[in-house]
Image (cartoon, rainbow, N blue to C red):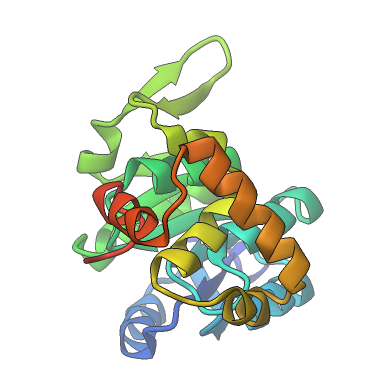
Length: 221
């Protein structure tokens, strides 16, 4: 058992509060983990994480506001010691790829038992990787670089994490104005991202953009 000063300090960011409350309740019985805060959206989550500087952050892929990968990039650049784990219902190559881009130490599916998440948090705190089995099967490990990468590649890998988030909003039928409001960006910036996304993917129709996003697992049908 760890001492009080060595407890693994964890922050959860997930908009499903019933799930978070259940996990936190289970973690209160673990002598090695201390939950120092929870948040239900990306913006509040980032503020909480920067304030508490936890050892491990558990993020859902689907977060209101700026988006999980957008804040994950900031966490990765500003809090070098903080490790990240994504806990999600999405088994999608591009999301796994984005998680690896921000140096996440884990990608677990929400169908896993809580004990798997506890195990992953403890491994992540030591700088080790932990993935659900179905995620692990999609990865290859580079022993020279000592890091994982996704086996399959798609056109989506040419997009930045912010462009992926913009694409997801647009694919759901949101207007440029609505996307700008959600992501706290200017309409001009969203328009620019929209143009670059369509150019990179070779898609010039919003309907086809939605169909493509569903096929690639970015959004649910």
